[in-house]
Every structure is written in C-alpha cells, then in structure tokens.
Picture 1 (tube, one colour):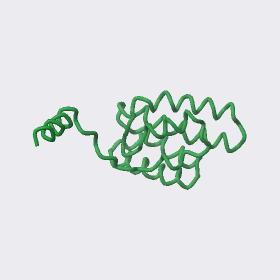
Picture 2: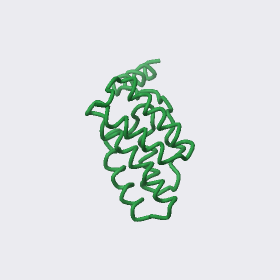
Picture 3: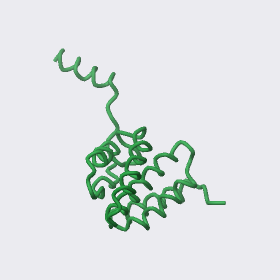
Picture 4: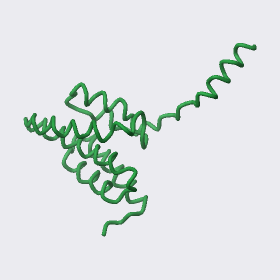
Amino acid sequence: MPDTEPSSVDRWYEQGLVLARAGRWFEAHEEFELAWRACDPAERDFFQGLVHVVVATYQRERGRTVAADSQRAKALRRLAPFAPVHRGIDVAALLGSLERVEPDPREHLVDRHAEPPVAVEEEKQAEDDQGHA
C-alpha cells in the first residue's frame, strides 16, 4: 500500500515538477503517478492531468502526434476544474498552452504561488472607499 502522508504526495509532486522542467518527461510521469495514487480523492484529477501533460509532451517529442493529442485532450478535461490556480500552478495558463498545442509546457509547470484572488466584496469596498475620498 502506498504511503499516503501529505508530505509524500508533496514530495512526489515537487519532484515531478523538477523533472518536467528539466524535460525528463517519462521520469516526471512516474513521480506524478505516485502522487496521484496516494493523494486525497479530491486531487486525483489534478495529478492525473499532470501525468497526461507530460506523457503528451513525451509522445509529441517521439513523433507520435495521435497519442500526444489523445493525452492532451485528457489533460484538458482533468485539469479544467482546477483553474485558475492549484498548488501554485497557473492551471489556466497551462490549459491555454494545451489548447494552442504548444510543444513544450515547461514554462507553465512552475509553482508560482500566485496571490489568492480578491473577494468581490473586498474589491467593491475598495472602490466605494475611493469614491468617498
């Protein structure tokens, strides 16, 4: 039975990102798959989506465009619910890259630790405060 501690999932995820950024697609796939098998069910599609991203890129580099396109379509479907940002990944940008069939997703597999979006109420309050100043 796989180790299901969050630290193990985090470790496999981070290692998968490192390998993907290095263009080591097959090895990245292995790490993301370990994370997928051990993660909380709510994140399974996210990790499976990352598996599909790196496998699609691997297949494209091997000249297997049909296999790459199949994996790309699966990645789009699995990752879409996690947009705009999940675990520091700009999922929306990654999805855009996949939709445009960009050959190399590395720039989007970076943990950007994006700032959380501002709540609509807070944004409206700031506008009201400026209007009264």
